[in-house]
Image (tube, rainbow, N blue to C red; front, side, top):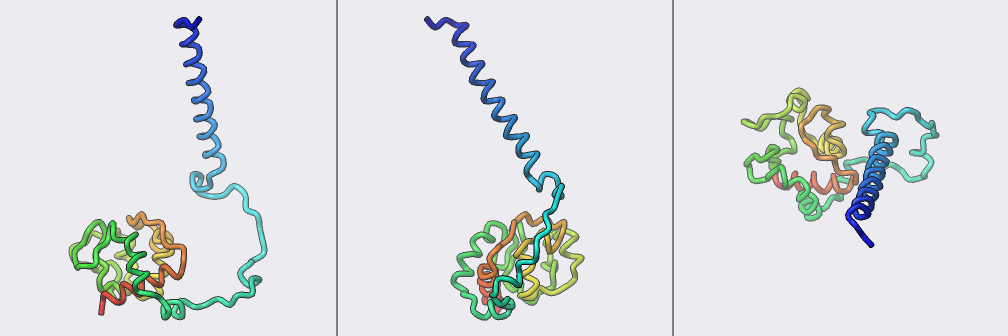
Length: 166
C-alpha cells in the first residue's frame, strides 16, 4: 500500500507546506514591522490625548520621594547582569555612587563615545530619562537594554542607587 514513492511524495508535500508558511511569515514581518524599515510609511494624525485624561501629570521629584528602596533592589536585578554595585566593573560600569557622578567617568571603563561626550552629571532626572530608553537618551550607546517603561520602577531603582552612594 505505501511504497517509497508515496512516502516521498507525502514528505515533500509536508516540507513544501512548511516552506510556504515560513516564507509567508518572513513576508509578513517585512511588510508590517516598522522597526525593520526605520520609519513608518504612513502616519495617522490624532489629537493629543495627554491633556484629555483629566489626570494631572506628577513630576518625577514627587514620584522619587515616594520610591521604595526594597522594590528598587528587586528591579535592579534586571540591571545586575551587566552592572555591579560593589565597585567592580562588569560588562557595564559599576553603579554604586552613580547619582551625582559625572557621566562616563568611571576610571578604566571603556565607554562608548556617546556617553563620554554628554559631559553632564547623573542626576535622578537624567537617570530617569536614560532608564526610560537608553538608546533614545544617548544614541549610539553600546548599552543594549531596552529600558524601564514604568516611571515607578525607574524611581525605585534610582532610590536604590542613591542609597548605595550614601
